[in-house]
Image (cartoon, rainbow, N blue to C red; front, side, top):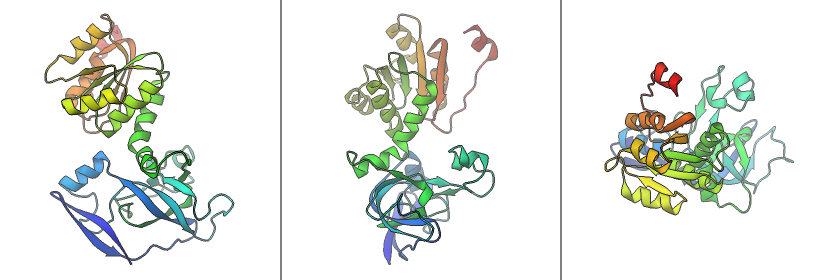
Length: 280
């Protein structure tokens, strides 16, 4: 038997006892070495889990070592001791979405999601399909692998959708884990990063992660500040990670002509006027 962390909402959690997982056909058991807390995990912790309270082990940013493999797993590709990250969604594996690398959009079966309807990583061991594993390079720590599996990976995906970030100016709205990751990655890619957040402490962290400029919307008009920093042109790129409606609006308004915005944060109302967009 093993113990795993379960959430009840209202900032209440418990360690509960669960059976040790055993791998079935095509599955592996991973010994967890790091398990992160994503922004959505904090929502589950404060407001209540997605599934029945107290029944599902939480954590969807796990990273660790392969402990055992089930029947049907190719031992030449996956073996005990391998360092791995884990993609926390899986579907049927056969539909167009799954085969395109988007199992979270599977059209055939109910999507399996760690910590929502399947046990997550806040426990010593986790059983998952072998197809969800991603090799973790030796030069990366397990903590880094846990972050890459969700928050940092999400930031990377958003930046890639924006296109060629290097040499450009990008405004990153929100400097939580995803936004800070975007700031770090965009800066490493050669971008000039303008970081936006309502918390000064997060803006200080953004500076440490490579932001050249910071803006606090509670103190400064974001659109005017970005115009000042870009000689009146606006920013070619914007990435919204906070999920706040005012930030989503600002992400559009700071753009230069032909600018591009990517919206990652959930919960915001993203509205635009077709005439104003056409004129830009």
